[in-house]
Length: 521
Image (cartoon, rainbow, N blue to C red; front, side, top):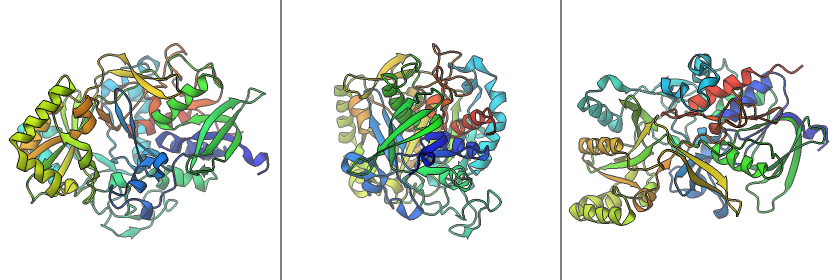
C-alpha cells in the first residue's frame, strides 16, 4: 500500500453502536474513515442455527471459535458482550428503551449539561436510524409477564418495548423500508426467537444494515478480524499511529496506519483494556479515573423452566415485553430460539445464601424436594422452548474498578458501594411469582450459585465523563483529556446507571458527540 492509502482522518477502533454512528456521521462530513473490528463479517447464513454450534456462536479465539458472543469472567462479575462487524448489535436483544430521569441527573456527568434536554433529539434520531418499533405480538413468555403485572397491580406499567426489528410480512423480502432505498433489502420477522444467536432471516436491524451500511456508501472502510494493540502520537504531535494485528489468523501479521484522530469504540472490555495498557507507556497522560466507575446496571439473569408442555417460550423476538416493577427497577422476558439449549448445562438450581456451602446445601435440598421436575428440565425438556430468562435491572448505583495486574490482565476490584450480587431480593421475589404463573422451576448461571458472581450483558463505564482529568477520562463532548482529536464513544463513556438496556443511549450520546465535530474543510 502507498503511504497516502494508509493515512486517514479518523480511525475508529470497534464497530458497535458508538463506532458505527461515528463512521457514518464523520463520512457525511467529508472525512476519510477507517473502522477496525476484531470480530468477523457475518451474513445471515453465517450465523449459528442454534447455540449448540459453539464455533459460530462464541468468541473464543484460543479454541478457534470466532462467533458473535463473548463471555468474560472476572472476580466480581461475568460479562456477556458481542463481537463482529456491528459489535453488540449482532448478539443483543434489540430492545431500545429510553432511561428514566435519574440517569441524566446522577453520576460524574450530571453537572456537565442538562442531559435529558440535550439528548432528546438524539434519542429520536437513534430510534429512527435503528428502525425501532413496538413489538406487535405477545407469545407465551410475554403473556405470563402480563399476568404478573396484573397480580402486582401494575398493569399500566406493562409495555410492548421498542425493538430494532423489521416486522413487515413474515419471511417476505422487500426493498429497503428505512432509508429511501439507500439501505439493503429486508425480510419480515418470523418471531423465531433467534435474535441472540444471530438473525438468519434478515429482520434484525443490526448496525451493518444501517449506520455501517450507509457509511460504506460514503467511502468509509471497514477492516475486520484485526485487533489494535498500540496507539502512539506521531512525532509532530498532531496525529497518531495505530498498530494492529490479526485477531483470527495463526500467523499474526502486523500492520500500522496513521490518522489525525482516533475514536475508541471497542466497548468496555475492548476500550478500557486497551487504554489501561496504553496508559503505561504510549499514552501516559490518560486520566487517573481510567477504569473507574464500572457499572453493571445492577442486574440479574435468572431462568424459569416451565413443566407445561403446551407452552412454547421460544416464540417471539428476543425481548418482547417489559414490566416496570417500581420506580428504580424493571423486568424483561428473554428467549432463545427452539433448539438453542446450550445454556441448560451452564445452569444450576437457584440457591440463595451468604457462602458457597449454604448455597450448595440449599441446592441439594431443592433437588431432593422436586427430583422429577429437575430431571424433566435437564433431560426431557427442550430448554429453549420451555425456558424464560428473566432480566431484572435497576438504576441504583454500585461501581467496580478495572485495572491491570502484574501479568497485564484486566481484573476487577470494588470501587464504591456494595459488590454486585445475584441475590437481589426484589428480583428473587418476582422470579418466584413468575415461576408460579408458568408452573416452572428456577435455575441460574452456575457461577451465581457456586461463587455468588452475578452475570451482566450491560457492562458500562470505565472512561466516564467529568469536568477535568481528575473527575473523568473524557469531557462532555467525548474528547479524551490531555490528547487532541481523541475520543471514547461506546459503553465505557456511560457515566451513570441507565437501569435499562443501554444500546439506545450509547447511540444517542454518540450522535451528540458527532454533532460537535465540524465539517471537513
